Image 1 (cartoon, rainbow, N blue to C red):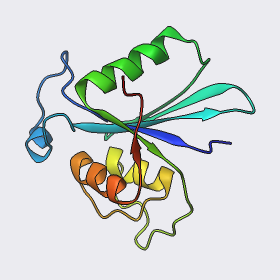
Image 2: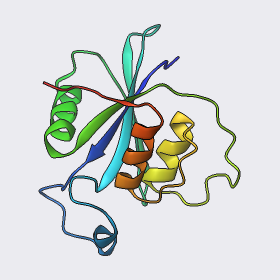
Image 3: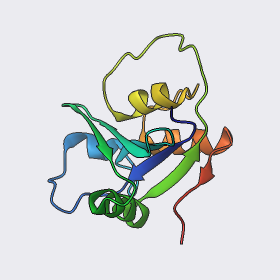
Length: 133
């Protein structure tokens, strides 16, 4: 069971071409994903929803790919530590892209549509910075 999620706000991807919806997002906050540690099974769960698909992976704590991901997000955007809660969403998940999927995952009542708006709402809800040097 995940008792705490780490929500990653990703900046620009160096190998990706700009997309039309990038004009709707703030630099440093182009995408949002999450990782959570399961202490019972001693693994990290990686959850990365996007407009085209959803990527879910399980990593050992010392996995180099996981450490690279944490570092990439830390240097291109920001991490927040979020305690999940149960929140009944009035309208359900109306679109499948990163922001509503992660809001649903952590139980946030945020009405944000963009990663940066969601970041600000999580800070107001009590989320704390994570993986800082």
